[in-house]
Image 1: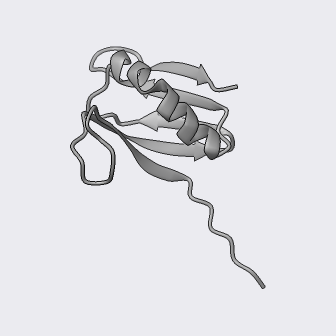
Image 2: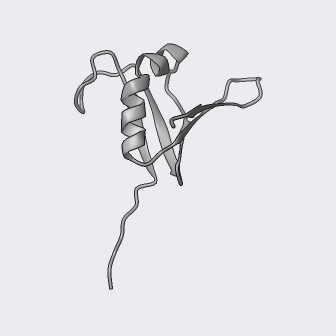
Length: 89
């Protein structure tokens, strides 16, 4: 008999001065792993600048987990849901 644990969800934090857990951050969201895809949902605050400024760090984090596609789901009041897809390969 054996056991295997596969994490499928986590929290992503991005911040200008974020280096270790406990440092201040500017944006946080839930990340759900679905196969080789990471889905970002429920951002506390997000701008394109947050993702662009940390693109290489995010690419390294997700690539190390075997992720090849990142999907950002955005919901705004009185607007249809929108998805932005980033291919990592």
